[in-house]
Image (cartoon, rainbow, N blue to C red; front, side, top):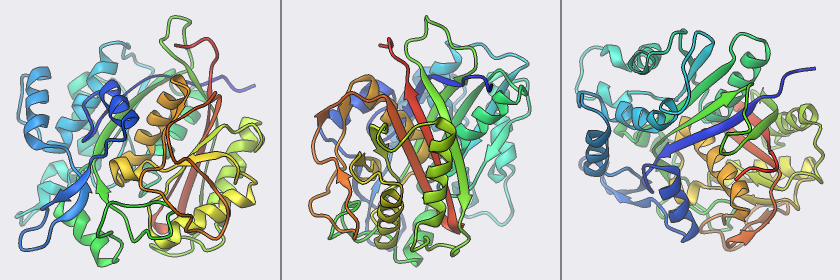
Length: 381
């Protein structure tokens, strides 16, 4: 029998705050980080969810003496520091970084490749700063990276390679990222509306998030969530377009729920990907219906945070666990009228609910899809 794997601590750094408490309070009152931002010179402002630089630097100065870090690294260090202060790093502790673009902003106005843009170098720098003793692991698989990083930690601990793991995720807004999505005509000209009839594209976001995962959870832990099942499948449909039949996401959900030994009737809440693009949201609706999950309360956090790329899956997993701890479902912001062909139970307002089993999903470029099932352990918080 495989050993149980638990998430017992987490933190996040987002435009809504530099702690989980500040983020949760903002979400409860419906505050969104999405606003108009001038990202590229000589181009119109874009709707995006962007961390204020002045506030970020001020918070970083409070916590760290050395200020010579690029912006993304400041976000990552801030997200991880509270967890490091509470949990020991040993020879059996893994360090896992999830990101899609890493320090991509370092490339601006450069003729060569700065060392910091290489993802292994970024991971090693963060690991060395906090004194990790094992070689860092990088998970960079488009927008499923954050969810997959949890799965990688779970599976590696279950094999006995590690006893625990710190998983961090982060991506920042840059001209490169904005230009890339704009070339696909995927960026919306208003705050995004996942699953809505009038949705017209994504808002890019940025964030850093961190979780502590262990096989040796204690009764003294503030809370405990068991990682029951996981799966990742690539449907190889298209370099950027999702499968019209939802095959990859359907298979990922089915495998994760099978490993978790949880039925569709037992899932209490779905934290979906929900990018607000025409084809992604439709694909998800098809996949959820194929799994008979259409009646389960569902939200997308993109209306609050934008699409934070490799950080989105980890950040949204954290918010889903916070929802379970507070027995509160957060709405899918900006949703008004159903805009997909299959029925979904989209959350429209704050709701009180008992949440035990959570399904978190993600999909991304290249046909990648991922899903995990989390269980809230009774008697916590």
